[in-house]
Image (cartoon, rainbow, N blue to C red):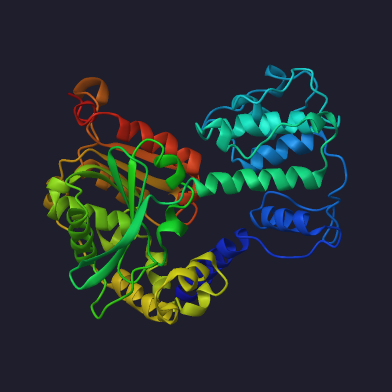
Length: 447
């Protein structure tokens, strides 16, 4: 049974690695096209005609152009919404068409597509640029003079696949540049040189990543969205990311105290805290030990006892080795940013010890938390759903809302979601987190 669990865990990690993309070469690209198309291929946005040909000079159809924009700009139908029949928007698109979902997502996001569109017609440069600009505006607003999309007289001619890829990548890079932190640095806390980044302005929101991970690998997709309306403060916990390890064990209490000390050092008196997995458990300890710092809690895949995990997950821990992570985004990011890249095996061993040690916090400790909390878990998470419900109840949930009023805390079970994939469900997370944080504390408490 233990070996089976280890095999399952290994497969999950390798699957996560596979999702990051594999590299192969097209032999029909010029230099500019190659940079853009291979970058988009690595992001999972484009594919070739086959493993060697991408046909960059071929004319792009409306179906191809819309699909490219929707994928590259991460447009989607509202999370959990029922997908409308294509006939609601279009007279010439079947629900069985390979591009059906892209067209519906495009229309739902305001892209100007005629009801009688011919998806097989060729797309002009002007049409493509106009739709791409609308998609960009949905991510903004951005000053018009900053836009990478420039309209020209020759925009009436047909767009090629290569031109579309180059323009899309420049637009994606423009968005990514907007996600550069306004401040970053290190703070000395409890003998640890702890790294942090700050994005945006507004109500502070602290992000605490999961085990083996870092700011970027856990929150890279969420930061640009969350930072539009709030000040996002992301930290790398002990031994993770850009924070070098020191000679002490990993513990949730210590990581909570480190984070609290960092917040005080940079002048944050009160903040919302969003933690995932190990980061969520650390967030609970911040709320217990430093309640004055916490306005609201967002807890994704979080546990407060060892048995919060399924037993087969715990059984697999002894079989985890540094080699299991070889080639994964987790270890690639660690090697890229860690002050001591050779320390990854040490991090693995410390995390195995942390997760293997049995612990159980007293219910009274959780009951002492007054901060409104959003508890989120995947329906196929490594955390047992019963444990998530128990945490929700201890945080004030589990009442008959029609009679007692809504409690201060909320519970969300995200369908079709695992422990590894939950932080990639960007649209679902944003749809839950933003309204919860935007509500006043009084509203959250049912006042």
